Amino acid sequence: MDENQIIVPQSFVALFVPPGRIKPTQPREVIAARYELCEDLAQALIERAQAVHFDTGADEAEVLRRVELGLGPVTPDSEFGEAEARWVVRRLAELLGWPDPGAAAAAVDSGET
Image (cartoon, rainbow, N blue to C red):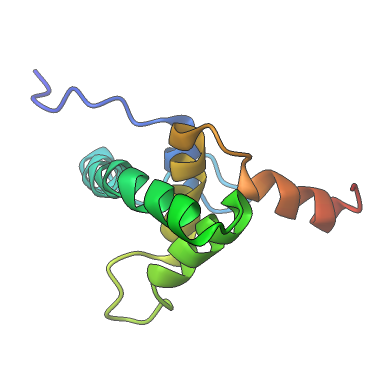
């Protein structure tokens, strides 16, 4: 029996599936552990993001941009990859009920506005 009963959302699993492929590049245990780390971080950032939004008057998109910058540039020593950092920011927006910053970027990339 699988001791780890975590349900990893497809949006996170997709981070480990290269374009044109079906199967993830990592085993389920690795993906589940990375998901737990990213989900915990998104949950932990809720109060800080709300405080920045309130204290500075920065709009929601700016707060989320600052969070993504705060996750740092991707280097070999980075705790999070670029895709994971974007996922954390999108999950944070979802938890706060703020607009999805990824949706705006996708609209710009596809020529929609």
